[in-house]
Amino acid sequence: MKKMILVAAAVLAVVGGGVAVAQSDVIAQRQASFKRMGEHMTAMKAVADARGAGAQFAGNIDEMLHVFQSVPSRFPAGSATGGNTKALPTIWSDAAGFASAANDTVTKLQALRTAATTGDGAAFQAAWQAVGPTCGACHRTYRAR
Ligand code: HEC
Image (cartoon, rainbow, N blue to C red; front, side, top):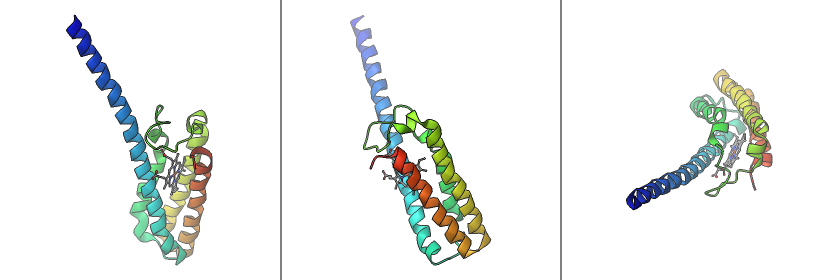
């Protein structure tokens, strides 16, 4: 009997530890994804500034679309704390607003994706410039400084 209780306690400890690890993985993974989003934006900046056509970024933009379409799922319940997350509680208290902010970025990225296929440098520049403010808008409300 005593042995069974010990086994049960060990199983619970493993499961509990597993949950903690999983949440910090979720946080580390979303931070890595966001970091990559920033790198993609920076890489495009030089070309946008020079009014280049941006066709070479089609793949990067597709990757960004994939990330921002899945933003809410990267913030599961329970990942508000842990690691060095800067996620604010408003993400969960205002889930609709958070999803809408992600959707604004998706909309601008879709326009950027289209601009990148037209070969029109001015259109690429304007579309690139329209993406950044949507990043900042979400960060202001949902990310700690
Ligand atoms: C819907 C909200 C939202 C949008 C839109 C958004 N972000 Fe973020 N971003 C966050 C949150 C929340 C964090 C903090 C995540 C954490 O620490 O767990 C973050 C973190 C980051 C980080 C820091 C990552 C790290 O190393 O910890 C970078 C860089 C970043 N975002 C870039 C961007 C860029 C570039 C865009 C636009 C193309 C963007 N974000 C759009 C919510 C958003």
